[in-house]
Image (cartoon, rainbow, N blue to C red; front, side, top):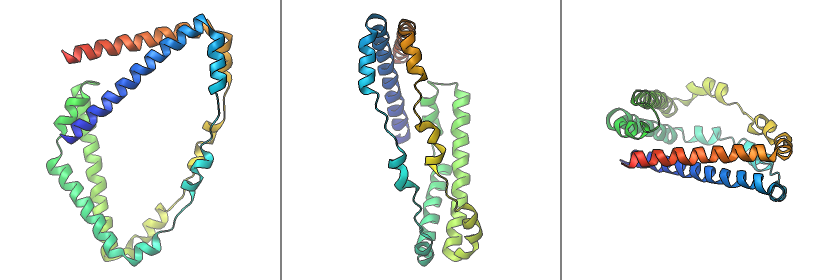
Length: 207
């Protein structure tokens, strides 16, 4: 029941965001056709570049926890094993895939929804079974996982991977400024399509 409620809330939030985006597209599209200069003035006022690289810097700093883990390896191993066993018990005996499928079938075919749900369940079962093994090893003899720990203990920089996304690209702005009425018409038609499509879908589902 809880999983079904969460999925319903997520879908409803997504639909509301799409409706808001469609309405906003219609408004901006009409303004581009009627008074594009005002849209561009508002765009220049709001067009402030905010970089997340500095905000992500503390997240890139590695925090060594190996000493604390090995000092209390029995407690840590027991917690990992018990948590993974509880997750396995829920996934194997208590997991109700029918509720999730009944919600997902609104967006896709029932067979696809069942395949996705079952694949996720099997993936979680495998991961938690591996977590039980790791927890038992940490509980009994943590030195056995040192080789795996050295292999897995690598640092990946998200700031380096997302650096190209931090660079501003003014090409789309110049293209819209050169053809305001064309892009205004495209935004208006696209926004109206989203509003009509989602409105019809909500009406049919509510019947």
